[in-house]
Length: 166
Image (tube, rainbow, N blue to C red; front, side, top):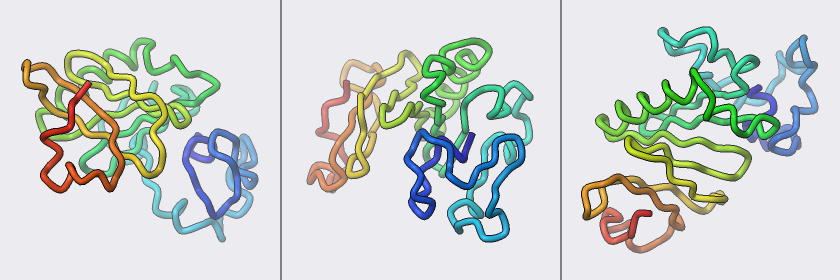
């Protein structure tokens, strides 16, 4: 699934389409010479020690990517509602609660569309472009919120506290 859901510019394959070098059921046709981005990628299913078998990407249609402060669930556009099904949804909500306690984000990405999973609800942010970022936090009323902002938004220089969260 990573060969379909992750953007690897070096392969010239469109996001959401299988990489031109992927041989379904066999693996990568250029494995020995694959791009560095592919060499460096660490799938959450492989590196997290306590991930149940149902998270196997070919089964779940979800690739888990973690970059330290953010956990992104890349969902196969051919199965866009998969993340809302059980057992995944229940486990994701528990993960969102735990992640927010650790100052981390949990995002669901279906193609270019992003949904922020908050402890108390989900926030559909629509399409998030490469020059935008997602911020999350507590709103003045004590509930959680999320917003997308341009990476160069001057409010981010002040910590983003004045950006309204939906």
